Length: 467
Picture 1 (cartoon, rainbow, N blue to C red):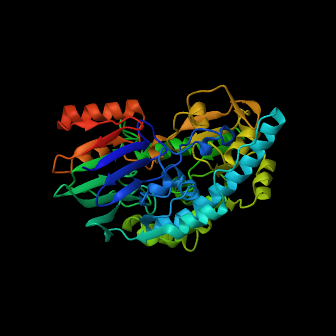
Picture 2 (cartoon, one colour):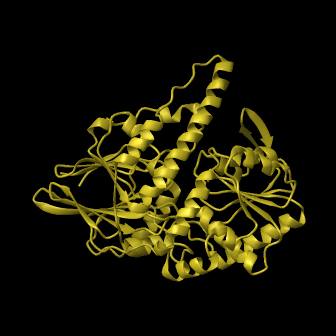
Picture 3 (cartoon, rainbow, N blue to C red):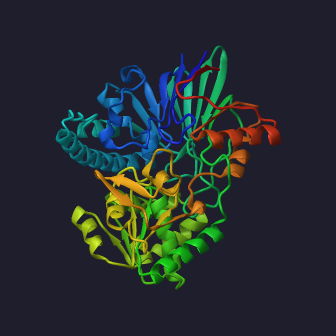
């Protein structure tokens, strides 16, 4: 009998990690993601894994976002040496994302340990090093969408386009088990239909077991036309107040969408003369990959993207400036008004966005725009939920900036799209709802049962099930 253990992103949104055990495949991790929500000095990366990395035979990665891939360097640091299967574009993005994450981790850990020593506490030891990042990249075995790869023991792996970010995949595993051929499908993160830079998620029809994300299981997104009108209005209002705009954004996917829409507003004459700063070396590198991979973008939008961008995003949005170095980032502080600052991390758990908050969050002329999901426990979620004060860098800051959320920019499928995706399966599979907060998964589960008579299960963290 095959078993599944739900190690992460069970009744929560981050830390995607599921252990599949079968005689044919051995012990395989579906994703190996970082739980986002704590600060580096809390020692979260040093929390022991709940399994022995040396006993894991392989990792199958749905996409490159750190909440799905960020624990890979720790996995190899603790003895994992198997293959890491992912799409070709995911492998390209991992090189950028894991190296950038290590640089931030190393710097933040140094600062955190300095604070700990001042308090008389013991320093936190690094959970991994630069060599571990390189080993992860060396272990990657990239395959294309639609390519069925034999894994041994009669098992095969196939990736299908999930439409979430470049390289994101729906995982389809087929393997022999108890004299039967079984099929397991893991949705990864499903994108929404009609995304400006992505294909729609592929629909599958056959499976025995399905793990489906439910990030937005309790609601649909605002139509994009309304979202863009709201975006334009917020920008104009802040310009009139002589303020600045801060946008926390994930380096992969959300940042490129935002730049594209800002470019459209500029070219339509609807954008005030803002200076737009992309303050993230990782996002800058990723943006160049998007430019290079326009053949993977939705055909209609890809054609427009190639036409609009000419040779680069900066030709499409002339007021865009790249801040690569720390000095470039600090120089933005000299801009008193008229700056749109896009920086990571997307949930404000680290990165340069927090430094911009330090300079501007206390000023009522400024605006913070959240364009992505903010998980519980993150700084971003606290601000969205109305926190009057926040703590960063060992100090307290008043939140007086205007705070806005633009739901329509999400790169995740909304409730209706999730229902449509899962009901394409014809075999009445056993369905596990993952990667969502409890209330969202409960609403989605009830909707699927009441409207489609589809029973689902919502596993708890650490739960092990046989199938």
